[in-house]
Image (cartoon, rainbow, N blue to C red; front, side):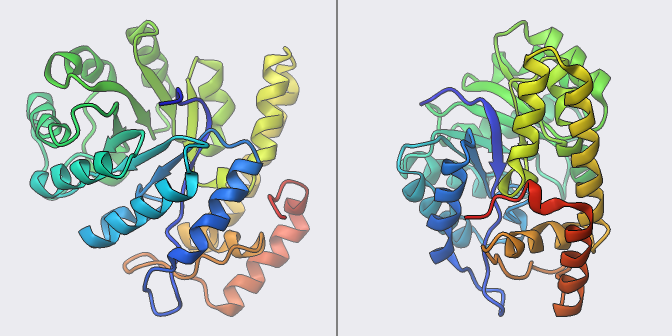
Length: 303
């Protein structure tokens, strides 16, 4: 596969008004991401509402993204599940359809009570696709599984032969920095907090995975270019600006406002599954008015 790098869009799962899948929209979404030089797709994660989809739905979502990507950019499929057996089946499916890499949340109902148990669970899952690079999905605010990622990196390769790195979705930047020091370039670490993208980049991330790269990648791309050129002041000023926009979206029913922003750029991904909230027409109109006021259109990935 192509090496994962740059901005990786954690894709939304489009839905009709009744909550059923609207997969006909996926090729348009993927084409837009490719046109804006997104580095890869992360499918069925938190943004894609993977834990709220049925197993069969998750397979369909993965299939349509792999087909739409058509080898132009890599596709990472998140297969974590409360059942390791279901997760292993999803891993087998991801390999069968030609996904480029695998990722997984830990089990989150009966949670692993030790790092060894977490690794045992992930070993079982990744056995379903032993030839796919595996990236652990660390997002402790949602999973309540918070083993230190440096310890995880030290132990994982001996248990999970396909271990390739992890997605670090936590604000604990010091832990991320220490984990980067731990890997010594052997594995890839991706930062998963959009409004701290440059902070993660500054301490050595291999790229970033996030929701807002679906519709406002240009501001992050400009910030990264500024950082690479040595203009740290400009890079962090752009990060702050991006953070204001993200905070505005989240102020509209959290992820409901983020998903609704896809409609703003002409790719209406519909409502979310319960217990996530969705914006009604009045809520969407209020969001648009505030996006216009803050100058979001300058960065929006329209057309």
